[in-house]
Amino acid sequence: MSFPKFQTKIELSDYILVEVVGGPETRYKIYKKDNYSKYPVDTSLAEILIPYYCGEPKVKLGAFLPQFDKILCELLVVADRENVSRLFSETMKSLFPEEADNFELEIYESFGGVYSAIDYSQEYCKRIFGHERGASSAEMAMNRIIPPKRTMFQERDEIWEKYINAYHARCEAGKRRRAMGLRRSLQEYLDGKTDESKGDAGEDGREEENGRV
Image (cartoon, rainbow, N blue to C red; front, side, top):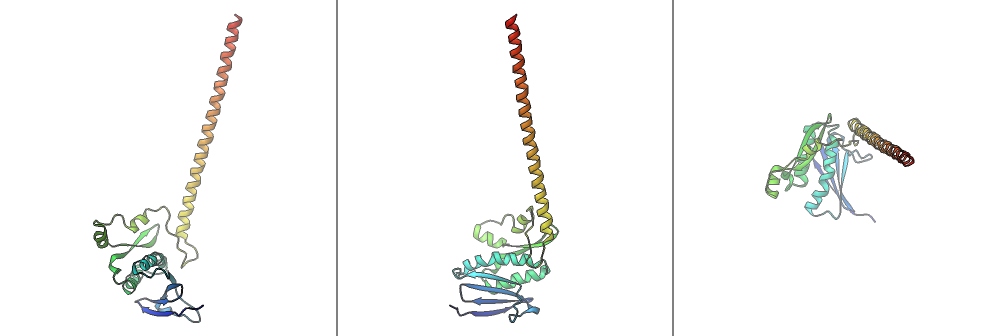
């Protein structure tokens, strides 16, 4: 069974956003403005899927943001930060105008690369929670041991590989240290038992000699 589909084309500064409504989900496709083509080859950079049961605006926003967050971070591999920041702000104002000012895109440098994270704005936190926002998503991400893996626009993420390999090496070194400690403890235990048995044997010998005397 086919469902009627309705498409809305939204032109942004550097990208084109196409909203396809109908069927089991709503689709948002992101195209580069200078490479927009749907037929015969779809040249979209990325796609966001919103299930049909996420029709209520805030629920829809909750389904949209995590996917959009990942796409923006991936885009920083091939696009500059101003380009990605414009995509975020223009998309939010086009799709969620009432919520656009409640969120902000934080772009940060860490692990030798440029990354991004969507977070609540300070004003929104004060209004909703009554206090300033604590550590931001970017600050928490910078304290991670391993950066996020990005392979949407590159075959290999060399930065991620570098840190994941270092992490595995540290884990293996820790396992070896723990294993050596266990072997040392076991050996010390066995040596102690041997010394005790020798001591017991010596005492028994002395008792026999005293008995003979």
